[in-house]
Picture 1 (cartoon, helix red, strand yellow):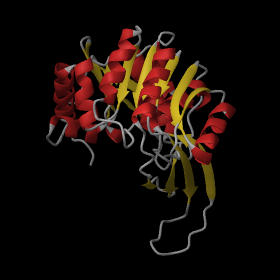
Picture 2 (spheres, rainbow, N blue to C red):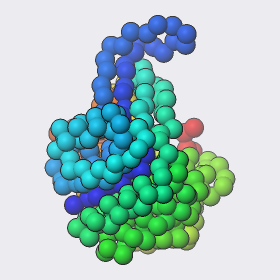
Picture 3 (cartoon, helix red, strand yellow):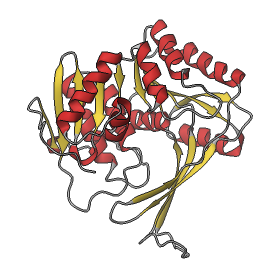
Picture 4 (spheres, rainbow, N blue to C red):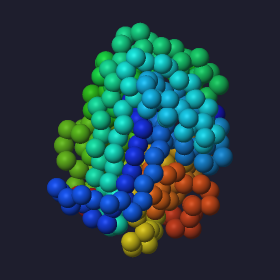
Length: 314
């Protein structure tokens, strides 16, 4: 079972429009509503792949109730932590060329008691989880050390921990030695404090995160593929996506992490699953998560021949 923790979940509304024109009245050609937040998306992708998952989420108000209902409709078990504030609502506008404009609300402020209740909910279920995936930004009220506390508690229950966050909360959590961290290129550059111009630069940055405490680094490089850097070696993965097939990159990184964990969470086979899930996700509308039927393993290449000199796309 894969347990996910999303401290700042959301209700996500995505509208597809012919073009985003500032100051104009736009008529959407399509719309969808999904439960959101990085950990929630990981649970959705894990469930879509046919694996068991449990989502631990703080929920409040009508948006929170709707998030719980939408997750239940997708067959996802939920361990809700009731909060006094309202779960945030986010909006995304998708254009035909794949351009996505997002407006993310700040979300509620959690009290000390709500923070402790969220940690307690994780502790109540972590012992039965092969992986605890801790994902997303921290809401107001939670200190940057919160993920570090969560990593330590999950390890205390014998679970492996995957961490997908950024900024100070990532750097502090490295002290707890998470088993895998999953930054994108921008987050990786922020973590080491310098720009990354090539895939080789990304490899060096990932090694620095490992030296700081991460067991492995699964780095999403966008159109430039994905890296897995661990004690066992360095692998590079990429997938062929047809021109014009990209619809939305919302949740693509979360789908990648779900594929990685569901495939065991280590080694080239897990990286191949991550790449396949990410490539499938960008071809789906909104934050829809891929099912096995959406995957194209034949389009995926994983190799130890890492293109170190390849420039990263800005």
